[in-house]
Length: 176
Image 1: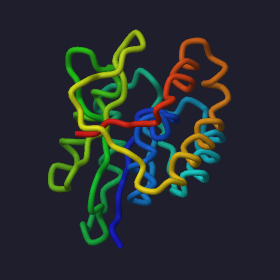
Image 2: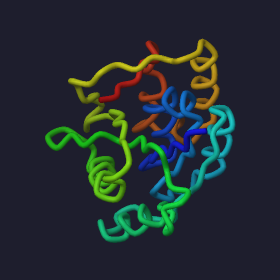
Image 3: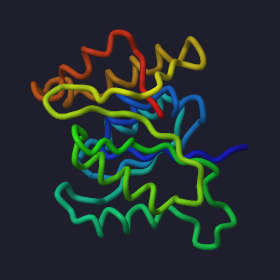
């Protein structure tokens, strides 16, 4: 069986932007930044049918700290390493700063592993463009994504992030 690793900068990115890829590949979801939402992450990844790990990188940490956390995901012997990595696409002009950093460092850390890129969003509520659309592999993936989204109650209640949970009515995700 293939071993897929989905790297999400924040708890909710795996569900908002990459849940179909996570489900399709039964990916291990690793969230880099620890923002105190592990309970919601645990529930969401249960709906997605994916194991998860929560990193311990505080927001605002240096690139070196983020890189060290990603290096820690590698098997030092290489014997049981990942077959594929799913990571946030780097969008330099409009991309989210932490998403770009995680994407860039994922590319460096896993340069010998095939990477599938998923698009997140740009600042001020805009989604990045120019990516290939990804649809659910199975009909139940849509229902699981909706159930997983509902687990992020703190994010839904937050006026800054709530609109992202309500604006995904077409349920498509973007990858490159």
